[in-house]
Length: 54
Image (cartoon, rainbow, N blue to C red; front, side, top):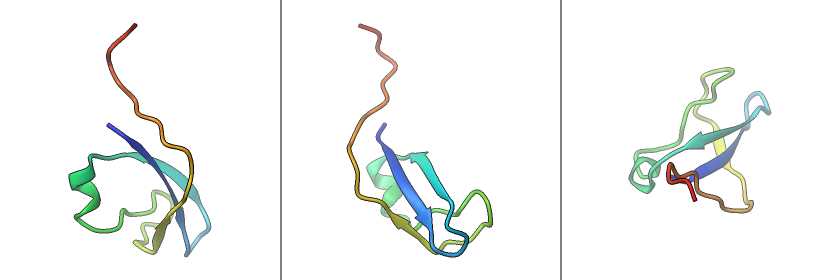
C-alpha cells in the first residue's frame, strides 16, 4: 500500500498516511494533530511498503 505525505494548512503539521488509491477518492484525510480536513498532499518521492521479504 502506498504512503502519502500531507500537510495540514490549519496547524502546519506534516504527516504520512498509508492509503489505498480507492481511499484517496473518499476525500481529504483528517490531520492527526488538530482534526482539520484542511490538508494538502505534498509532492515527493513515491515508495511502497510491502510485507514481502526479499
